[in-house]
Length: 472
Ligand code: BES
Ligand code: ZN
Ligand code: ZN
Image 1 (cartoon, helix red, strand yellow):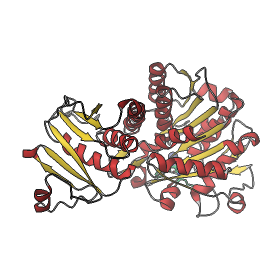
Image 2 (tube, rainbow, N blue to C red):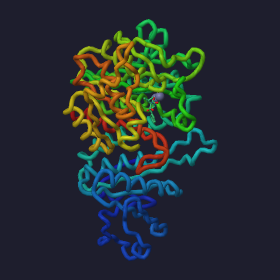
Image 3 (tube, helix red, strand yellow):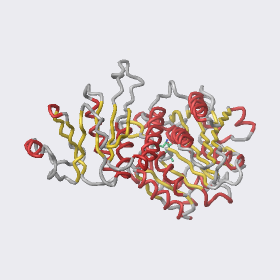
Image 4 (tube, protein in one colour):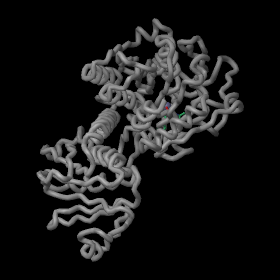
């Protein structure tokens, strides 16, 4: 979907079809009120009336909020996509700055389809949405451009996450990272298993040992001259999680191609950060690994030593993401000095999904103010997130009799939090307050469409992080 922005008073704009957002279920001033009422159109959220002879799509928008507007425009765009019309137009609603962001992001995110594995590709003529503004374009143009960059980065991440493990394995992830680096002038270093062994990253190395695909540690960096702060973004990139020897039951294994969502989100963030020219030094670090079974597989009972020298008793090979992240956290802190903020993204626990539902990200860390800021930024960006609290008693449930820490807790409860506390063991003292952990296991991949999100990958984490970076 191509988008363009015009001033309404320039009468030169013509389009094949008009999209009209009907706010607050209020049809009073709507031109085709009588006809719409006869059609029983009530202008509820996601409700749509297509009037082909009048070349109009009416869509309900129950309140003047980012979410309602984004869902409304996505609903209309999906209808538009079923037609052969080339152009549609839509007018902004007050406040124009706010509605512009919602319309641009809602349209681009809502128009997304994933056809990579379809033998018959959809029509190739690109349709266009023309956005009409009453106010001066000067003030709106930068919002339009930023929203476009952000939404396109989310779609790029969706494309990566939706790829399947047969053709998307750690080396492919590294190739994608290099492609994004080249496009945006970023530095990109990729390390294989020899590096992991040499630098004693045995926690990450063990997880990938049974796979025929070599693990890859990916490090992207963006260093503008005017950088004000140093940010590190770390992603779990399990291109497949079979569970390892603690094998997942068949119906839990399906969708585990999405276990690379954290890493793919970091790729999307790096792409957006560079294109937005943010005045920050940002490092993106991804542990790309495949968790498989085989004669060389790591085992429940093994004790692994991470890069910081801490020993880990493995009691479940399906709690592998935290083992990969442990070494990635150490690598980041050893390599990068004077970090201002360090955030990690991972589809880490089923417990997060059980606890807060499949649409919400769980945010954890030691700094309450920072957690609060992250939750607020998420809400402002259009994503759902909540914070979960660490406590000393859950911390004790990770104790090991034979090593420094266990990779799973000894209680059935609070699994998202105990996973977060496990990661905290690998956050150095000087960075405790600078770190946040985002468990995106719920929203990263949902097997039915929701609002402007499609079936499959949603690109969770990107919009909330870009908003948070603005507010730090
Ligand atoms: N990748 C999974 C977590 C997950 C589950 C993500 C469902 C998305 C949807 C993770 O590696 C895992 O298997 N975690 C285990 C941890 C357990 C063994 C302590 C889990 O959540 O069951
Ligand atoms: Zn697992
Ligand atoms: Zn996993």
